[in-house]
Image 1 (cartoon, one colour):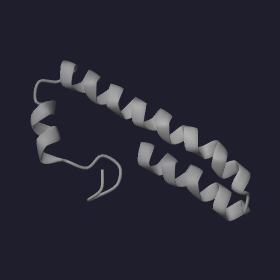
Image 2 (cartoon, one colour; image 1 turned 90 degrees about the vertical axis):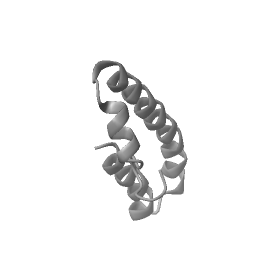
Image 3 (tube, one colour; image 1 turned 45 degrees about the horizontal axis):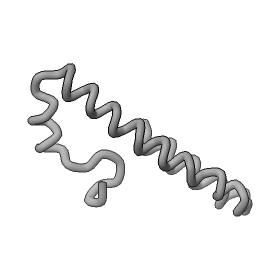
Amino acid sequence: MNGVTVWLFLSIPVVLASWWSLLCFLPYIGVILLRIRNEEKVLEEGLDRYAEYKKRVKYRILPFIW
């Protein structure tokens, strides 16, 4: 879900041709990154085999990038 919202928030300024709203989008990226890191920490603590899963699935949002 997070990946979808990143693309949504990135596309809105482009579609509306509002570069000021693109500046408002930049802090959102940081918030999402912090949320993902926290969520993974909670999952590793709560699920036994999550660390194993994380080794198999390396990409979180962007395939072949991150």
